[in-house]
Length: 109
Length: 112
Image 1 (cartoon, rainbow over the protein chains, first blue to last red):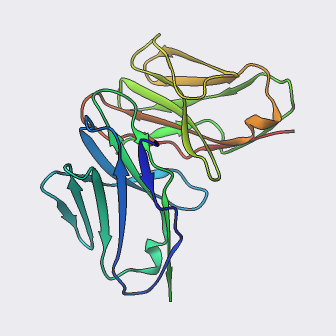
Image 2: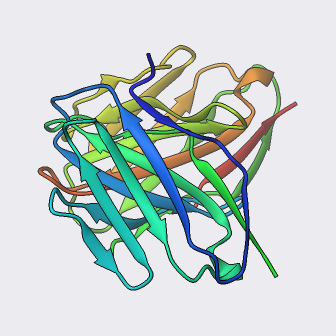
């Protein structure tokens, strides 16, 4: 079983829509989680960290469910500029981050 | 802001050549990483380093080696380049502890 699994998509949504991605992980010892965003032919960039209590940054909300071993990313009021691939990432101890393969989002006018 | 700089954005080399990809970070980070990214395969870890002169194999080290002589610089070496090493190579660094990684712009390497 892959350590971090994501639906590759693509998710095609109209502008203004709300869209949610889930990501499951298999290592229950995982300590930290992040969402990264990667634009086409560019490097991944940190979007937000994911905290146990859930956290919000503008239109973006991240949630962590340790019991079910998944994290989620909710994007409200989607913009064209949100079109990108979203990478789910987990970390255990001082080990390299483990990246999912990403979920592709296309926001359509 | 963390700055991770990779020496080349695009590179074309020939089969059998020895290829050096350089990465420099300016934030005194202990940890540095080399990945390759291919369509459908996601990011795959080649090598990483927790400190100067230290290196650890990642998931796909075959055909690669690394060098970390100075804390700020982490070099990836393709000993004898092959066409299946054509890929996007990404360097990253991070501070120890519960910190995210910061990536360089990437090097798109083509082996002909």
